[in-house]
Image (cartoon, rainbow, N blue to C red):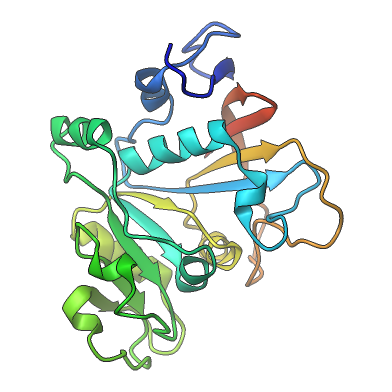
Length: 253
């Protein structure tokens, strides 16, 4: 193995590896591989006591193993879905991948990098941000018909309007799939996760559990509108271990 942080298999519904087996990037790519159907996969990290952040940022919960899986998830997706608030708060940069990951995508017949999709009902985004100006693939912005676009946004992104004053995520995902963006990875934030859940659009949750007790001040990984109906049943697809981080993948039943 390389000097990458070790990630070991604990359990999988597919019995894909023996318990304790160390997984290289090729194996991790199989464990988090692309689906045969359109899929919305959500990725989050949380503390053992349910916090979504430490001192305001998710980075305080992460670790080398989590970041390694984070890179694998970006490698296999078609589109990276993120709320504008999270984009600003977490200091997102242009989505880029290293050469081995670009080479893997080329071999799969995919564009070298996934498309960044920014979700914002208000269009409160900065067209001069490097996340737009330095993007190797032109980003997409999902917004409403009522929102006024800042000058210059159309030069650096495709603006797709779905919904009048409330953003229609179902229509937004349909518009992305018309562009061939079937495998969608959502990185948050909690309000976008909540809106996707309320609209019954989440197919998978990749959840890293960080071995920290942070106390009661932070919010949960999900926020926003209340979902009508019964809770969504999931099944545990696999469990991995990296240092003391648990890396869990849940899929819909």
